[in-house]
Amino acid sequence: PGVIVLGDSFSRWNVWQSASMKSGSPDMLTFHWDGFDSSECLDDWITSLKETYPSARFLVIEVVEREFLRRFGPTETRCHSQQQKPVEVSQGSTTPPLRLLRSFDFANDLPDTIYAMHALYNSFRFFDKTTLSANVFVTPLIRSNLFSNHRSDLMVYYKDDELIKKDWTPEDIRKAVTHVKNLQLSAAAHGLTMITAIVPDKSTTYRKFMRQPQTTPIPDIWKELTKQEVTQVDLREMLDKAADTVTDLYLPNDTHLGTAGFMLMGEAIAGRIR
Image (tube, rainbow, N blue to C red; front, side):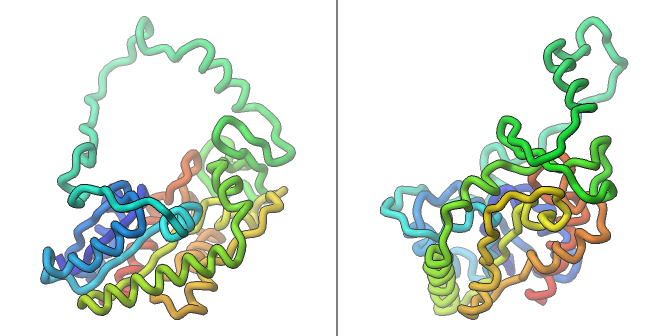
């Protein structure tokens, strides 16, 4: 591979990587953050990459915004991880097989009664303010054409978008970005050009469309990356612009990007690699 990728669930299924390669990027090999139990493991892994993959010239580090401090913040955990394996050969990384279509069985295929009642209730439920429901926030929008689902007047997003970041400080971010900068310098010393790609949380991208956004200030990781001259793909700026015109840039009922969002992400990263 010419490019090594380290990413989270936004990278697990190789969607944006496929778009990058189609746009001219060299072949990519992806690893998942689950294999690293401390920042020390990441340091050690980077220093050994070139020995294991001598053809690699680039290292792309992908992290979703809300996980930034967990990945790069201070930790006292020592490295105990096993040898890292690419997601393509890791257990559980294969795409689940498609189920064959069959006729509807009224005796066995009817949904659970309680679930059906909740679903029916929520399909007509009125939300006049941002409301916590289980592990997501439901928030009313000022536009109803951002998503293609039935309740496109509302948006759901993961509760940790707000709850994890509410205690972040500018100093926390500055120190974490300094760690990223040091990783970039270490990668360069071992013959790799490192590119950082922070995926904005769904609530960050769509905050301007929320009828009643939460009061939690958005920590500007991307600005600090620029300030410390970290090589990055500014996905926040790109996705912020795209959200104005692209339907389902993020999935309506999920925290991840939609197909269009992944395609844009892949093309943007390819633009920094070519």
